[in-house]
Length: 324
Image (cartoon, rainbow, N blue to C red):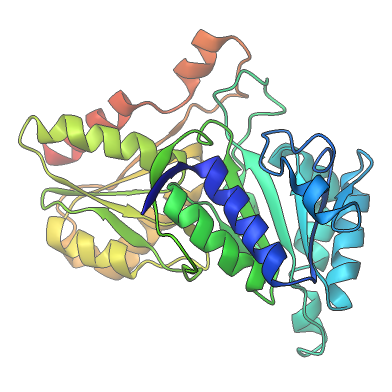
């Protein structure tokens, strides 16, 4: 296995799929000559050319509208949004067109579209550029929502997303491109809609994904020093949501903490907690505790931004609360 960053893993997945399938192409703002805002597509323009790496105007409606059209006629577009916050400018295409066309036409059309979008806070980009609205998009049937937290999952899930015949929103966290991890060499896919145990434990179940996984793994190491062994379930995909590993872990530990970077109200943690109560109520020894961002627009000031975002200390405190 090679030890690479999430940025490199995503770049490898894109490159390999474009080499494998000539119907795959990339479009978005600054994806070509500039190489992408986060350098994910650096070198793609020179290798694949302007036909397959298309710089677009700053117009999310145009990006998504043309991508859906291309998908409907047999291409496999990968539309990059510079930030998921700009997805709100193209909501009709993302939640009202792409996810519903195959269903509304009885399977006569396919929409093999991947929307790559950067989300999350921590880079001092201000309240309108630092949101984590994952739960909003996961609300809509027909749209798969993927948000990996490791390089291995980033590559394997992105390759599966590109080969999917349904639209996939692939969310990359803005502060995690430099996270390193082991990635299998050669061809491999990770199925969309499968949660994964990222750490074995017996005292408490921590459910997380993306940035929440990073925080949870660090918290688990700190807790282990105090004799508390946390089991960590990485959701990886928000729709479809695979709760089986979560329920099985909870039936073993009887306690759960859910970690997300989005706001607590109406969030991913709310959904996970509700399903635990619905499916494993008899195993509940303590209320499920949710760790999330403070309910404010994210501040620009670094100290205030970090105060609003969930931290490792918040996860540690939540675990100790459910173990009291």
